[in-house]
Image 1 (cartoon, rainbow, N blue to C red):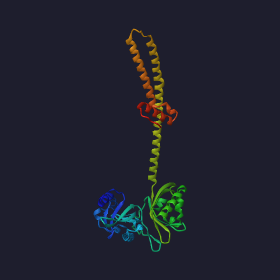
Image 2 (spheres, rainbow, N blue to C red):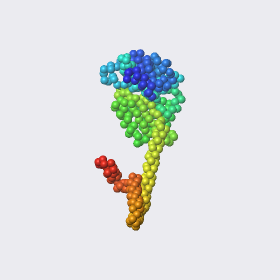
Image 3 (cartoon, rainbow, N blue to C red):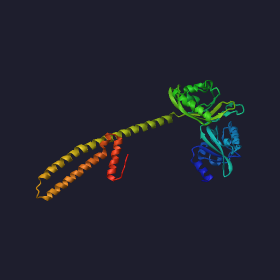
Image 4 (spheres, rainbow, N blue to C red):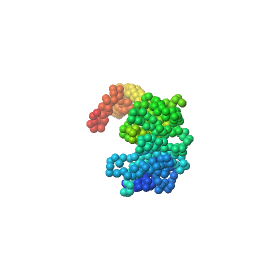
Length: 381
């Protein structure tokens, strides 16, 4: 597949925001339909626009600096081939902003250097001073809507070398999601861990540790206790890691309320369980019916046919020997009764072989023997 073909297919099929950026000018060359829809801009408006211009004013310079840094990478070095992941805030055409997790990868299309930017919305960017290792808040007034009564929380968390944590950045969705205020979490960062149910805390700590060790996205889902409403709530945490110069680990990302989707998932799982139980019950009822019919065919019909055969044999003995037509008719009826008895036995066995009462292994061996007998093809279990 040619470069243009796979690129067009990717831009049309992906649900993520995808941008193809000129590696020298940082201007947008292509954008996916999802990107145009999220930004509320047609592609004609995005074409040729500097990609950093899409970011909130406080993050535009930071985004430009990351693009320049990626453009200068040496593709011959293995460490420079890894994608660059970080958080940002993009601005829609109507002026509202939304957080997004961006992953940048340098490559070539038609031997022209470009940067592929793949974005997952609702991951916010925070800015750290890379020279000093200190952190400042890049979200000025207007970067994030003030009426942020949403089921998600933009946050920044730092884990120091001694294992202690802090939340330098928390958006207005803190109380709405966690049931505690920003100031409470700022002053007591350990409060967040205490919100997590005890049975989910180990997975939270383990996922954080893995993200720090392997420098991969931190993605965790678990339950918290929201004391203000006295209920358990499911949250999903998605963040990008970044190591500061002082050795501390910094994550920037978003927490979302996934309670409704989790409840729907559990309801679907419960429905599947109930459906499986119902199917098992239906099969059990069918098995009972087959067993009953099989026994009735074997006992009632088989018994009656055996009685008919015995009575027919008695009558045949009393037929006059000088009437061969009657003797022939009697022999025919006798053969017909034998075939009917055999058919009844076969039908009863097919509905539910009595060998099943011994066990599935014996039943399979019996079935193999029956197949071999009828088809002449050797078969063993």
